[in-house]
Image (cartoon, rainbow over all chains, first blue to last red; front, side, top):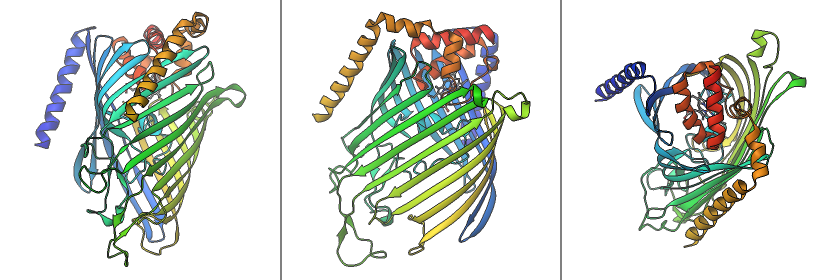
Length: 387
Length: 90
C-alpha cells in the first residue's frame, strides 16, 4: 500500500518534470521543493552515553500555482520511527490572493503563533540542529492546525505591519484517562474537533525600520479544549507569544548578525483530574495552576563580507532556551538548555552544523521520580539541505 | 458572541489600517521607491540565507514568489518587484 503510494508520487513528479520541460510558461505551474537532513547525535546523561546516526528525514514540498492569485501548498514528511516509515502531512492548504493587502488560506497550515514553527524550523533554516525547548514532541505551543486564515501586510510610511487572523479546530485536553501522568497537557497533534467550539488566533507583526531588518510580533490563540459532553467541556486554553527578529549585514563587523527570540505561555483554566493510584494517594481528584512557559533567544554571526571564501561561509551561533511546566502536575519540569554551534554553509540552502549543548533539567514526565537535578550534554553533527 | 465581537473588531482594524496606509500617498511613495534588488536584499534574508538569483528559472521564481509572498507577508507590489529583479539577473 505504502509502496504503491510512493510510486504514484514518483510518477506524478516525473510526469510534471517532463511536462514542465516542454512547456515554456503556462498559467499552471507545478514545483517540487523540500528538504532533508542526516547526522550523528551523541548524548551524555546521568544514565549513560548514547550515540547514533539519525535522520534520513525527507520532506518534499509540493507547490501548485494557478494564475497569479491561487496556490496549493503541501508538505509531506517521511521519517523512520523505530524501524517503521512514518508519513506525516505537515501542511496542505489552498490560498488565494484577495487583494493587495489580504490573502485567504484554508486547509492544514503552519500557524503563525510566534515565528519558530512557521518560519524557522526547517533543517536548512534553523541554525541549530535541535528545536528550542517547548516546541515539538510534548511541546507547549501549536505548530499547525486545520482551519481558515486571513493574512497580509501593509506599509505604513517607512515601516510595515503584517497580520494574520485564523480559526482552527484547536488542540485537545489530555484528561488523564489514557495517560494519567499527562493529565492537563494539551495534545496539539489532534486535528479532529472534539467539540463544537473553534479556536481563534492571530498574530500582528511590526517592522519599524525602513530596511525591514527588525520585527516584533504578538500572537494569541484561544478556545475550549475539553471533549463535548465531558466534565471538561468548558475548560479553556489561552496561549500567547511574543517574538523578535533582527537580521542585518553590518559593515564594521564584516558580516550578518541574526537575532531571533520568542517567549510563549500556555494557560489552561481550572480543571480537576482523577488521581492516578500509582503516583498519588488520598483524595480522588487533584488540580494545579496549569500554566506553562517557554522562551528562547538566539544570536548568530556570519562573516559574509570576509575576503576569504572559507571564512565567508562559516557561522557561529548560540542559543539559550528554557521550559517550565506546571508545579503540582505529574509533568512538572524546569529545563534549560545552552547550545553553541559552528556551521559551514556549502550553498545558501545546504549546511553542515556542529552543535554542542548543555541541558539542565528537573522533573519531566520521562524522569524517574525523585531524580532531582540532572545535567546532560549533547553533541550533534548534522548535514541539511533544502532543494 | 464575545469571539464574534473580537473577530469583527480585528477585521475592522485590519481594514482600517489597509485603507489608512493606501490613502497616505506620500508614505506609499517611500515604499514604492525601493527597487526589486533592494527589497530582495532586505527581505529575503529575514528568515533564511539570501537566495541566489541564479538558483531558479524565470518560471520557478514566479511560483516561489507567490509562496514567499504568503510566508514573508509581503505586498503584491513588493513581491512582483523582487521576482522581476530575480528574473532579470538569474
